[in-house]
Amino acid sequence: AQSVTQLGSHVSVSEGALVLLRCNYSSSVPPYLFWYVQYPNQGLQLLLKYTSAATLVKGINGFEAEFKKSETSFHLTKPSAHMSDAAEYFCAVRRNTGGFKTIFGAGTRLFVKA
Amino acid sequence: GAGVSQSPSNKVTEKGKDVELRCDPISGHTALYWYRQSLGQGLEFLIYFQGNSAPDKSGLPSDRFSAERTGGSVSTLTIQRTQQEDSAVYLCASSLEGQGSDTQYFGPGTRLTVL
Image 1: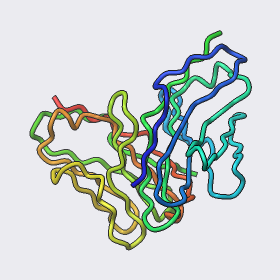
Image 2: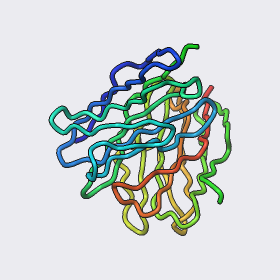
Image 3: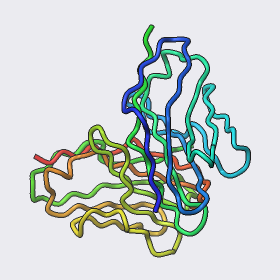
Image 4: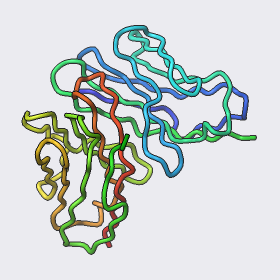
């Protein structure tokens, strides 16, 4: 069985500050991991994904995430927050073998203060 | 090119009525997914179609929920005898091949309100 836990339903940072959104996963087989973003009044779109190649994955808009197997984590970071980063972020896990049901976390809403 | 489209964008219905939600995936995408997003919660997997394979229905919450995909393209999610707890945004996504690493492309969703 797979599961995803996102720590913190709400995160608030100042513009220019580091963004850190936490995601821990549980998977009985090697996983694929994803971060999706949902901007206000828009659909979900992919930020980045881990597919067992490089453990440090770079995505759009300056975001990156590092797969740490020992910690079962896939935290999302961005060095300097911008007002336009305010959105809801979802971490997701999927098996890499047999059956591709995707499990999403509950989401973390990021607020960026001027 | 066109993205995933869903209709209607909003649906208000009375408790006990049946509703049908439609999803048009991106042309050429063989995999199609339905999710439910309730207020303040994440996405809940409902069902997954991949090509001609039997769908993965493991996420459907009750037998009032069903979905079909005709001709490997358009999909319809049907909720029978709707209940107030069915109120949510229903999201559809499609991906190219249904591989584990595929990016899923999401539609704008259908907001269902059951009175």
